[in-house]
Amino acid sequence: MRIGIMGLGRIGAFHAETLAGLEAVDSLVVTDPVAAAASSAAERFGATAVDSPDAVLAAGVDGVVIAAATDAHPELILAAVKAGIPVFCEKPVARGVEESLEVLRAVEDGGVEVHIGYNRRFDAGCVAARAAVVNGELGLLHTVRSTTLDPAPPPAAYVAVSGGIFRDCSVHDFDIVRWVTGREVVEVYATGGNRGADYIAAAGDVDTASALLTFDDGTIGVISNSRHNARGYDVRLEVHGMKDSIAVGLEDKLPLRSVEPGVTFPAGPPHHFFMDRFADAYRAELTAFTEVVAGSRPSPCTVADALEASWIAEACTLSLQEHRPVRLEEVRKA
Image 1 (tube, one colour):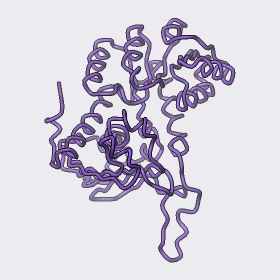
Image 2 (image 1 turned 45 degrees about the vertical axis):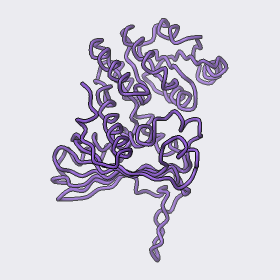
Image 3 (image 1 turned 90 degrees about the horizontal axis):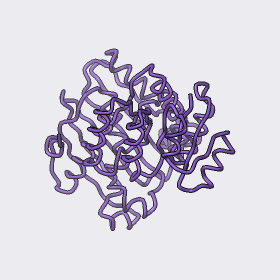
Image 4 (image 1 turned 180 degrees about the vertical axis):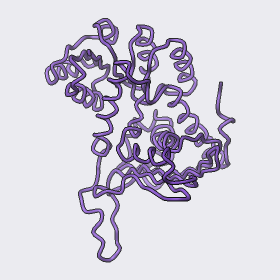
């Protein structure tokens, strides 16, 4: 198959390399606002460089991967859907939920598969956790914990437009706990604080946050996030049930130091970057997209799925601002 790539920054270039190595992919067509980035990718991966997204869509591609700036996502998704071409788009669907809703309505009417990139659904540990829940190995669930701790804060320019820690960071945790449990969140209570990086507070955001989620079956979710984890990039998941408890991320690259006497775990160099921690998940995610393009499976993470995670982020943002529990129905729009 022939795949188009729109956007060749850090993640777009990584996707180009991954796709170029997949047996199902015969050729790539790439574009980027910076012509040199497209030329470089064309040279590295044997792709065809074109000068615009429209040119990608006109190049006979079977599917498109959107790794452009967030502001461009809605327009590019809708252009591909209008052309009848399946889409993989990095999260988020759009900068705000109103625009995401517009995209959702258009996609539902278009009948074209759209796959939103929540890569943790393809992490081997998370996949195993989901299987354990589905198979009943854990029994009735009572608690799920998800942690994302970044090694250092993002730049001030990013923070100024990110929408806040719940919308740009915690949303990965919201998506994965929803997917692993198979349940919907009905209420949240969120809090946060600032322990460094003054520009984060100046932007009206927090650099460390926690959220308590209540699911529709009574399961409790505990979300923990921070921009400051000097030891590395720490992403973990725990799922606790009446019959058993399991964890994702407890491996030798875990960026956490044990001080128990005689304990050598974790023994390896810690993860320091999200593309290190999730390299295999990204590859599995794009392999799944080629199956979507081939028509052998539906989208594994739809626009509607992505919007559900966004509603949780909106509720947590409101809870943080107003220091109170927030029901999802308060923020959800039809």
